[in-house]
Length: 196
Image (spheres, rainbow, N blue to C red):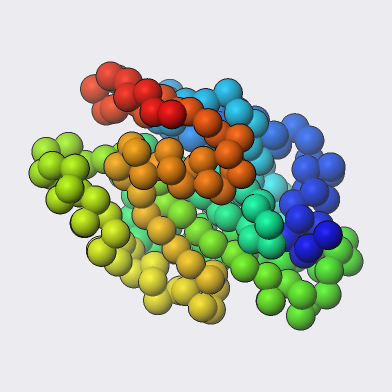
């Protein structure tokens, strides 16, 4: 078994209540609004406390953790506004939390941890009125949102920002190993786009 799978399975076994529907994990709880709906269970990383912190709460961490092959994928869902400092802090603290967990449980060696691939994706609400799908697709792929690209190769191996409903589905389908076979994307006006 590879390092990412060892860590992920240990987290799932220790925190089985963290397996929740994608609908629940992506929900904007402060505004009680759904964002991406699917009944498929994903690991809610928001509930995991860094074992090395002295505070009683959790760190600022990404919403979900996926594992595919020897890669851990952190996913942050932003239905509402977000800022650069918040997004970047969640990446740092997510990686630190997983590292401290793996080391405290003696799951893998430090060298194995740092040779493992960790990727990060920010899924945010599509900006209304910003042009057609081809324009948005080009923009989505070319813009360095929140300067995430400068974290690649050091904190994480790769980053992505997705806000087009089809590309959100494609990403979630891939990193879930195909278990997310369909989603309902909820627009800001509460209309629904079903994608499979």
